[in-house]
Amino acid sequence: MLKNNQGFALYESMLALGCITFLCLTILPLLSIIVMKVEDSKERANSWVVLHEQIQSIHASGQIQSFEIIRDGVAYTTILDEGEGGLCIHYETRSKKKKTCLS
Image (tube, rainbow, N blue to C red; front, side, top):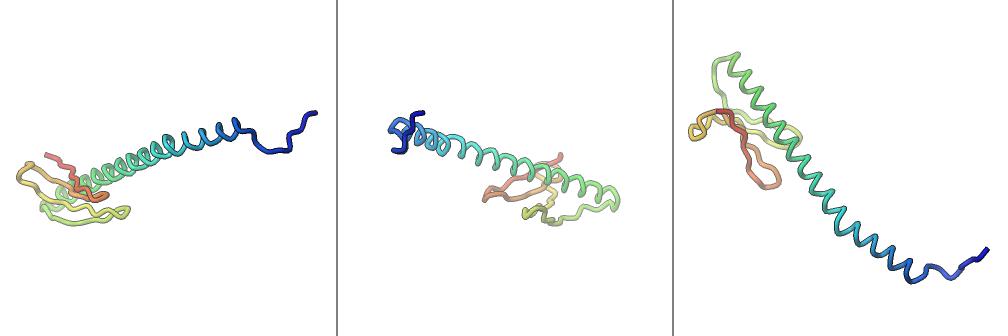
C-alpha cells in the first residue's frame, strides 16, 4: 500500500476551500432567508388567530373593544379602522409595521 504522510495535496486543499466558500456564500444565507419567512408566516397566522378571537368577543358581547395581546414576543393591537372599513390587527416585526384587516 502507498502511504502519504505529507498531509493534503494542493488540489485537495483548494477543493476543500472551494466547498467551504460555497457553503458560506450560498447555503447559509438561504437558510437565514427561509427562517425569516417562517417567522413571518407564524406572525401572520397569529394575527389571524387574534382577529378571530376579537370577532368571537364582539359576537358574544356586542361591543368593539380595542386591546393589545402579546404572543411569542409580538404585540398585536386590535383597532377598528374606518379607512379600511373593518377590524384590523396591527403588529410590528423586525422594525416593520404590518396589519391584517377584515373588511
